[in-house]
Length: 102
Ligand code: FES
Picture 1 (cartoon, rainbow, N blue to C red):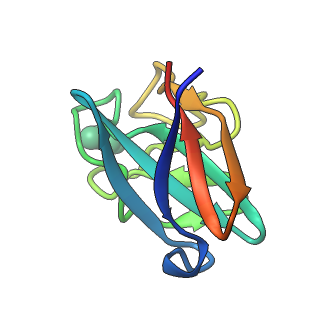
Picture 2 (picture 1 turned 135 degrees about the vertical axis):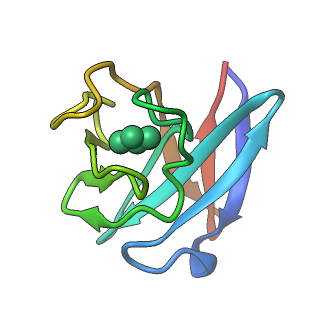
Picture 3 (picture 1 turned 30 degrees about the vertical axis):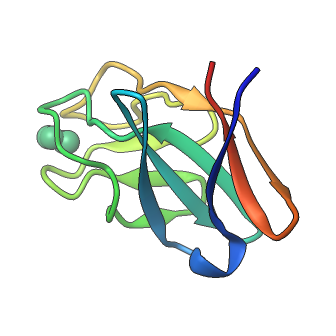
């Protein structure tokens, strides 16, 4: 288990995402209400970054063509994406958001 310090909690407003690099993997860390999520930052439709996409509830909307992904499971909820994105566990400790990357 490898917990990565992603960002201070104060840096993530509700509905905001930040992108972090873990090795060669880009991860979008998102806040929705008081929940924090982490998903691979590559849309499975055409490779767009999901960081910056609008967040509605527990879904993020790809800014390029509008596919929706579940932030909890990574499941593609609407076309034009059909394949899921990877998800990563998150936690809040010491005023910071942490992402578990194996
Ligand atoms: S690149 Fe994300 S929906 Fe097309």
